[in-house]
Length: 81
Image 1 (cartoon, rainbow, N blue to C red):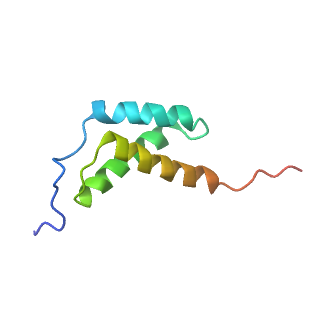
Image 2 (cartoon, rainbow, N blue to C red):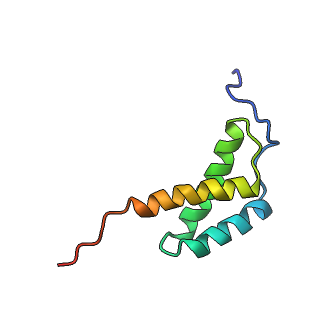
């Protein structure tokens, strides 16, 4: 089977690189479950590498923060009856 998108970034990120990013974002987005934040960070890392870009913790944190902001801001307002 042919490879559609070769990895240029060197493979999957190791947990020590992702844990500090996930911890900082989890502290910033207290209303979002920690496992959702961790999954977002891992997904951003994988997508960055899939696109053939160099995934750095700083870049992944920036993009994941934007995704989490969109998630929080897209929540419907609470109904105050």
